Image (cartoon, rainbow, N blue to C red; front, side, top):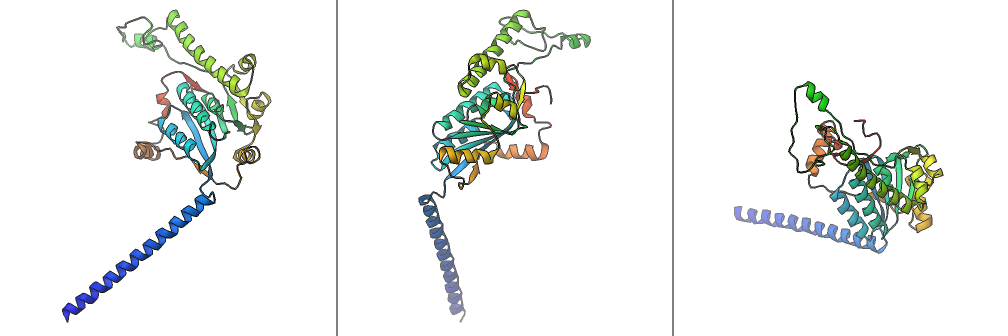
Length: 301
């Protein structure tokens, strides 16, 4: 009797297992059919959305995500939402050039939020069309290299810095040394070269004579309305207006969903932990601004 009962129990277990696997197989077939149908009817097509906020730095993971979006046939256009006071010149240049690579394959629209100044405006130049709110703050076209002379303070403290250098201009500017006239001129030359690059970007992308750009690029900021009047942007509006332009000018339907570009970092777990528990009080991105920067209000920490 015991043997028959065991066989009956085993048979029921086997039957339940087969039923479970049949259900799983049916679900898999249905999912595959839905996926195929979605591709056939363009269901996977969408407009990608890249959010750029905070301090702009050189970011290889973001570059990889943009390259994937450019190569993805399902991505029909890219909207770049900018809310940034700027950042490093290298970071702005890298993102600008990557947006231009995307624009070679599909339309790119920049939408300015509260602030899109300095390097924030530089990356907007990588788009085919630039929109801003009437109250957006943009412009601040320029480059700055900051340092400080603390030698007087150190002298009062009885501290005398010593440095052995290969040449006089090595490690200049340097807070521990008084800036010489020769070092000041060398640093100014580097800043002006980067400024010329920025001016050339504006002239080329906004189709402006250099003289016109130079008149606008004195470091001042502009409201969205002023930027429109001066030809620095194309229209006033937000993402809704960007989608309308894509629909009317590039035949990309309003019905397509918008999906955020997923930037995957190698240290994503630690990034999330620091952002949620510690925040940017102790681990501020601004601590990494150790070179020429294109940033509005760089002294406000």
